[in-house]
Image (cartoon, rainbow, N blue to C red; front, side):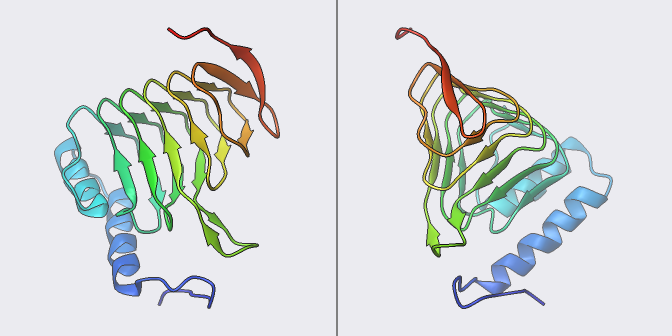
Length: 168
């Protein structure tokens, strides 16, 4: 049974299917090929073989997540993808990180966009509507409430600029 509110009409069949696949993925013993196949079913497209997602991994739909190539997502990452999450090539996401595309206080779904060559530390929270520019670094423990410019390092709660690189 799927828990729903009037704020978000969920496709309960898709959510239920996704949760069954995630349950199998996160609690079963799977080889890397089976893991990639289950993740491909969750995302709705073939996962690029250069990507690695460590388990456990959590998401609502999965179908609203678009991944580039050469991406590493560490363990226990949660992507609340009621809105779109787009991640560019050559991105690293640390453990226990959360990407939220939904603001439950205003009932709005807003996309998250992460550019190319981005490094996101562990225990980071990225809020709805945030764009992280290419070449940016998000230090562990940061809460990202606003866009991060290209080639910028941010830290803190809320995130603030600690270093701005010249264009590479």
